[in-house]
Amino acid sequence: MNSRLTRLAGAALAVTVSLALTACGGDDSVEPAASAAASGPFEYKDALGKDIKLDKAPTTVVAQSSVAAALWDAGFQVKGAYGELKPDAAGKLSYQAGSLDLSKVTVIGSTYGEFDTEKYALLNPQLLVDYTFDNKALWYVPAAQSEKILSLAPGLAVPGNYKTTDEAIATFVDLAGKLGADTAAATAAKTEYDSALKAVGESAKTSGLKVAIMSPGTDSLYVADPVQLPEGNTLKNQGLDVISPTNPKNEVFAQFSWEKAVEFKDADVILVDARTYDAAKADLAKVPTWANLPAVKAGQVYPWYAAAPYSYQSYAKIYTELAGELKSAKKLS
Image 1 (cartoon, rainbow, N blue to C red):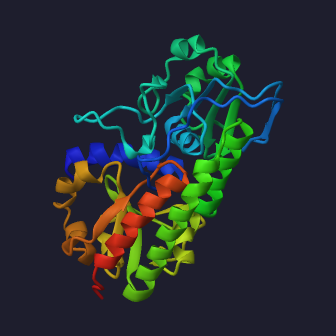
Image 2: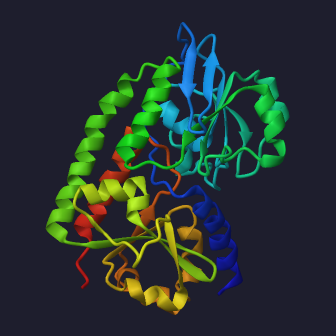
Image 3: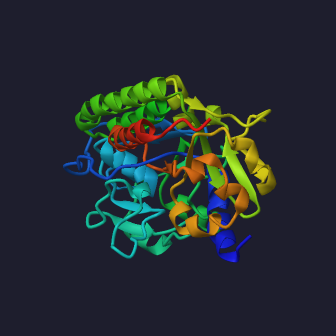
């Protein structure tokens, strides 16, 4: 395979597989009025089984970018963030950063593996929040620095995997509330979220489309098992026919050689990793088994927003976009 595609897709795939997937994002959420200031103690049992107890709800919270953006939409304004926070050539942040306003947030790191411990310490942090996907460590906290980082403030792990997007979003609204946020805006946004899901269901019912969620790798094609993804289960619950790999092994991805990509010729629509697809699109077009998939030939390849913030605002936008794509797509088989 083309070496440029190898670099682009390979780097992303390493993150994609370890992250066990997440989905899409938006950028027009309501900004929190200010950092929350709840009275009384803060208690939270995290995804690593730790009981985190503080005398007062923390106001100086630092979080991984997707986590920070989810809390932001839920009404809690973090003081610092790290993760995918590097603007593109136009100065725009990745969808993974949601509605974060970096003029009001100290950036501790702007890509995977980058964490400025000194800058973090100067914030006098009271709490750090990140995902865990292996139930052992915080996802974006570099292992080599973790001991120092976690000596400065407690680390709170939120689960990386959920049954549905409803469950995932509820986790962050609940955490924001415990941190003292007014979550009214998040609750109000649920109406738009529910409407967007309804629109997906209506499109699924009338179209009969078969959909596959994929991530092209270096020498392999990775196809997601929808029952292992919160968005996969949510879309299936709305009646969308999301294809499962043959004989799934209770893993997020099934790995296929490019020669076996033809097994997915029945997919009318492909949702593909939004983090890398635009950059890799030209190179993927040179892979015959990809280029000849009916969905690719028909131009029915749409973004799958892996690692987007879990918020009603974010997913309302994602599902609205998807409903429109499904409405315009044609049955190919």
